[in-house]
Image (tube, rainbow, N blue to C red; front, top):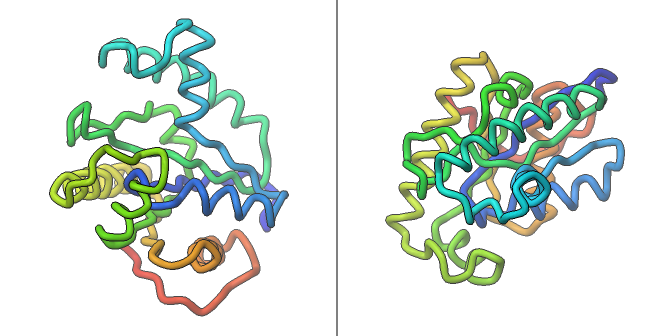
Amino acid sequence: MVSDRTLIGVTGVRGVGKTSAIKSICEQKPEMTAVYMSERLKEFSLKTTQAPFFNHDISTRDQIRSQFGAELTESLRVLSGLILIDFHLTDVREGAGKIIQPDCILREINDYLFLDASDETIIKRRKLGELRGRNLDVRELAVERNAELAALQLVTGLYASQLLLIQAEGAIFEVQTEIFNALARFGLIEERCQFAMERLG
């Protein structure tokens, strides 16, 4: 692994399984660091406003995100090694074309992985996980996926980052293998397994 700091943004629609995969990877590879943006943002909101993040209106959320982004960016600068950032670029509840992450964070991320699976798999995982009861409609899922991909392609074009698609259809060890493959293609780790991946243009 490279010795300097490298930030990899790991995204995908909610419920695709990225958080579980990242947690499992970092358990196996303690030299890697994970940053779970949603958890950190919720903690920041409670600390600074004494209220849950989603209790605020959209304008106030944007202000909180901006303050959070500045603080997180500073904390990331003292880290080294490979850092996996678990986050979303969009939240269609706030508008399909809106990028919700502050620029100061996006400028720090080197490359991106987009985890995807079939509609059926994602809906099944949502029913089983913390997202049960929300966004179980295939049409709504398509809107979320398209919004996230459009935002990713915009951001990677703006900051000249690479973007790889990761198949998250299988068991967690298969998803981990796909992620390791991608990191190897980025030249960040030596491990590499022979699974096909698709580069997004």
